[in-house]
Amino acid sequence: MAFRPLPAKAPAALLREAKPLKALFSQAQRLGHLQRLLESQLQPAAREFCRVASWREGTLLLVVTDGHWATRLRYQQKRLQRDLTALEEFASLTRILFKVQPPTVQSAAAGHSIDLSVRSAENIQATAEGITNPGLRAALERLASHGKPKT
View 1 (cartoon, one colour):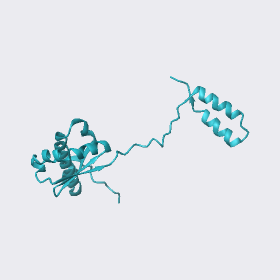
View 2 (view 1 turned 135 degrees about the horizontal axis):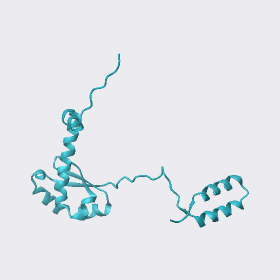
View 3 (view 1 turned 45 degrees about the horizontal axis):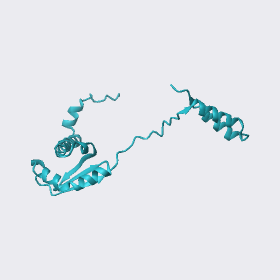
View 4 (view 1 turned 60 degrees about the vertical axis):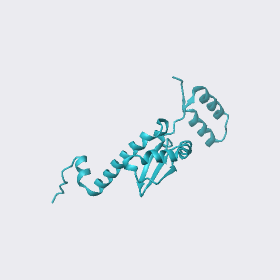
């Protein structure tokens, strides 16, 4: 008896039909809408640093990716709260919390690239030739092999 997989469904159909995905998708849409409302009240320079994390029970949690902007937004907190409360979606807003969370940086550790000039490589190679320790000499020669001509 052979296994026959179910026919593939379109992503939009999955988001409408699967209950866990439907709930997740509606929450993402809700946060996206709240984000747009928040951005309408923020100064343009602050918009890229501030994200809505959650909105429940009168508390708005904002994640700010830069400490400098978190401080500036804390100084503007009363004005921001007053402006947001004027909007229907934030009518029950009682407090705004700011959490500083620096963005995750893509690590380049997997693909280290060494930019070494030809002159530096020649100097390292010359040094390696004067070394008697075979392990150190081999390491310096490997390092010197990374020398690239300037383009």
